[in-house]
Image (cartoon, rainbow over all chains, first blue to last red; front, side, top):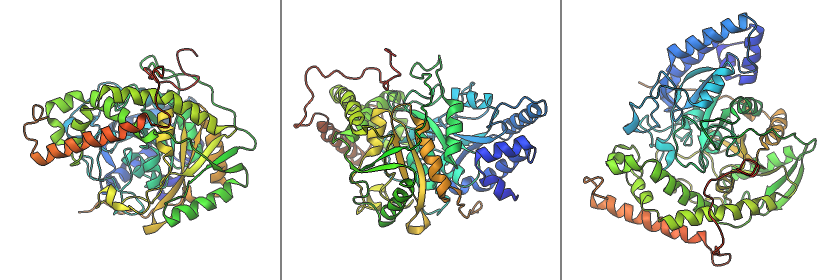
Length: 467
Length: 56
């Protein structure tokens, strides 16, 4: 097995290799640390590589293994976290210049739980500044520079969990943790050709995470397989006295033959490759699922509600930054003014958005009927070019479905999977949206899909640090 | 907004004004003519997903 074979193995395989003694956690950690140093900056994917902490944790994991005290499938497996999660021993920058020197002397609950599962923290991964809350409109929206997809450096890795997507795709970590307020796990997972799992709101504690929108923020895994995503979710899920929104709920039992609704208009105004790959995906899903076509998503203002809530809650969360005038230090031109516009959100608009949410939840519940999941392409295009503002990139392919806003405003889970490639060698993806707390029904479908396809095992050709 | 950042130039202030207008236009969709919000439609004051809330 070559170093590249190891680096690109999924976390489940890595855990087994460590358990068998084929590789030690320290050897694997050193391999990933070297790859982060070599490739991380090339893809704008890394903020801080935590050499000392990672090697200390790996040594501890190896000692525990030798004493027969392995803690489960993630024992000894190295990972990275989006730089909005607090971790001792490194700054927590939130991707934004005004917070470059910020430090917390504690670990976020998710980091603690992964530590308790024996996983090894490699470092803090790049992200869009403030998780994109101030309305950025181009890829250069982080003090570490634009995130770039490992499939083609001229294109964006997606955001806001940019580094989590890119590092997972490039084999620089065993798996990664991202967060989603509205699209920030699914978008980079798609642009980087990896698997992203957005948990149900409340499934995972946000303690120690930067808040952008208290009523929308979720934390979840970005991984090289659906089975990894499920394993990581199980490790980080559960109630937490430090986050009153986090709850203990059982994981749903998957059905033998899942029922999937195909969203009406799923491929309207999408790129040809997105459409073709999605149709091929439906054929694959049809081998083991009951598919019902043309399922209508209730016509409600999901996007307007998400936008208004993020504006109001984000402006409150970053009120001190806005009022200090230091928004001018942000990287993206639009972020330097977006916070001020958000700050002026009328309270009545915010309340109206929150008044719509019970309607939206009820309407989506009705639309789900007996389905385990609703499926659609994750994005209407491949990754966006780094050198163009987003609104100018692919104006002819806007898509017509807003499943990302609908899923986030109602708090339901979703999994994004790679399903092929399109223009410029860039990946495309599909998303399965599920019922509340039914993530394992989604991962069961996703695992079966990945047993029949190999898109999640493909490797990009990497470019080393540019001088 | 210049009380927060005196360095904001006129073009930036115009961008901010446009941003406020765009957000207000978008927010009008929150109570659509076809299905307007009614007096009794209460806001979510602490969001939770079915099965995770205070009643569960």
